Picture: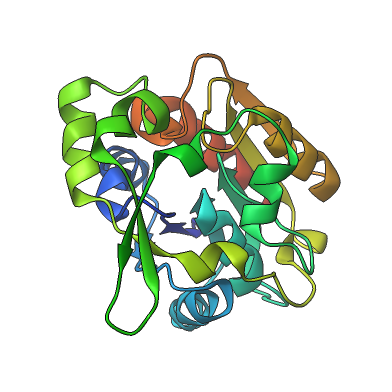
Amino acid sequence: MKPTIVLVHGAFADSSGFDAIIRRLLAGGYPVLAAPNPLRGIAADAAGVRALLDSVEGPIVLVGHSYGGAVVSAAAAASRQVRALVYLAAFVPDTGEAVGELVARFPGSTVNESLKAVPLPDGQVDLYIDPRAYHDRFAADVPAADAAVYAITQRPAGAAAFSEPAAGVPAWATIPSYHLIGAADQIIPPEAQQFMAKRAGAVVQVIEGASHLLFVSHPDATVAFIEQAARETAG
């Protein structure tokens, strides 16, 4: 039985961005789920993903993009079903680290200068990527017309999600991990991703010229990477 592939989107995106890789995984015979990610905070978001994981029978390959990497690292902790973690241009925090801290630790990110803040009635703040900056900084290798749609449909992240430190032992400390990096990522600097991947002992693949939305611009390479994780850990 092939493992179920569970996909977790990150901030400034939603599950519709996984369309191309979902179609390819289904064609390859994999069961697939796209988990909703509220983007409110690591602990709360991870609890929702963990509930979905608990409903799955059999082995799982858990995939997280960007902020979703922090969520899957918490959601899969102590899981016996999750056989591999696949990080797509993702944050891989250690205990006590916040994603905002990690992105600021290395030069090269344009995320802070690209944000548009929307204050909420309860005093919280939602953050979006300014649609005017979305194509150039978030999805530079995606066709402009497609990037414009992703900019419109993006889900905002609560500002608190970026400052909340990861708690507990991260799943990557005990579960094999794989990290796909876009060499032209302007959101999470490739140097930061290499640091996090090396620390986790991850299998690393770099796609030259790929942006932060590398799974949209390079679906074949992304699916091949996920399938590699499945073959090597869940067989």
